[in-house]
Image 1 (cartoon, rainbow, N blue to C red):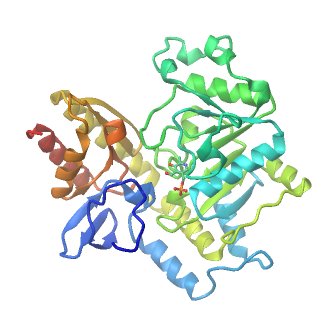
Image 2: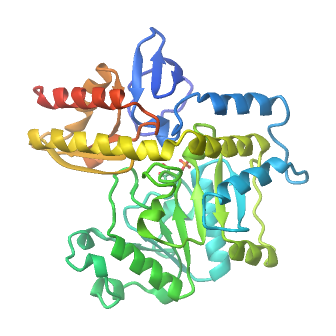
Image 3: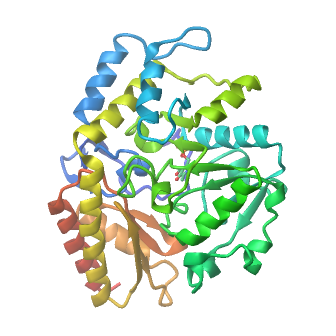
Length: 394
Ligand SMILES: Cc1ncc(COP(=O)(O)O)c(C=O)c1O
C-alpha cells in the first residue's frame, strides 16, 4: 500500500484478504486460511458473527453516535450486561473505543482516588499502546520482575517477608495493574501465591486492584476472566478486544464503591467515542452470544485439545523449548539453535498450508489464540501441519 504508513512493526504476510467468516479468512482467489490470531485477539465469537452483524445493521439504521449531552438507554443496557459478568453489584461502567483507552482511564482513576505516586505492575505486562501505562516511567510505576519467583519452592505460600517483596514500596503504591497471563502475548502465567500476595499487600496499604482483561477477558482463558484463576477481588476491570468482536469498543467496569467515590469527587473524563450507542449494542450482543452459545465452556475444552496436541508435538521435536497456555491462548517457544529467527520460517510455512498463527520472533514463539468456537477439526489440521513443518529442514 502506497499511502498507508507501515508502522506496526509486523511484516505483511497476506495482502488480499477480502472476506472473513467464523474462524476463516478468504483471499481474492477464494483460498481459505484458518485464523489462529482472531485478528489481534479480538474476534472471539468468530469473524462476521451473524448476531453481531445483525445487531450492527439494526443499530446503524437508528443511531450510532451521540455525544455528551444526550443519552441513550443502550449504554445502560450494555453496562448491566457487563456488570452481570463481574462481582460488581450496582457497579458502574464507561464505554470507550480501544483497550489502551480503557487501561489508561483505569490508571487515571486509580491515581486520582489514591493520590499515591506509584502503580505496581508485573514487568512483562503490555497494558497499553500509549499513556502512563505504556510508558511505565519508573517515576510512576514499580515494575516487579517475577522471573525468579517462577521456580520458587515457596511460590504457593509466597511470604511478605521474602526479600523480593520487602523491596516493593507498598506504602507509595496506589494500585496493582495486573494483566492475568497474557504477558504481552507471551502467555507467561505468574504464580498464584505471588499474585495474591502482591494484590493483598497493595490492598492492605489502601491501593486498588486494576485488572487488565483486554485480552484475557470474556472467555479467552477458559473462564469469564483471567483474574478468576487468581481468586482476586478487583476494584476496576478494563475490557476491550473481544468485547467488540472486531468492532472498537472497550469498557472500564468498577465496583459500586469506586463509582460512588468518583461521582462524589466530580471526576471528569470525556472523549468523542464514549458510551456510543453502536459500540454499546455490540458489547451487549457479544456478551449475550457468549452465554447463549456456551462459547466460554467450549473454548476451555478446545483449549485442552490444543494444548495437549502441542505438548505431544513438543515431545517429538527437540526444537520445541516450551508449550505454555491457559484456556484458548497458547504459545510454543522454539529453540534458537544458532539461527537468529527460527519462528518466521515456521510461520510462513503454516501460512502456505492455510493457517495464520501469531509469530513473535523477539520471543522466539508462535502463538495460537483462535476464536472460541473453532472446531476440533481445524485445531487438528493445525496440529498436523505444525508437526509437519517442524519436521522439515529449516
Ligand atoms: C493486555 C492488553 N491490554 C491492553 C491492550 C491494548 O489494547 P488496544 O490495542 O485495543 O488499545 C492490549 C493489546 O494488545 C493487551 O493485550
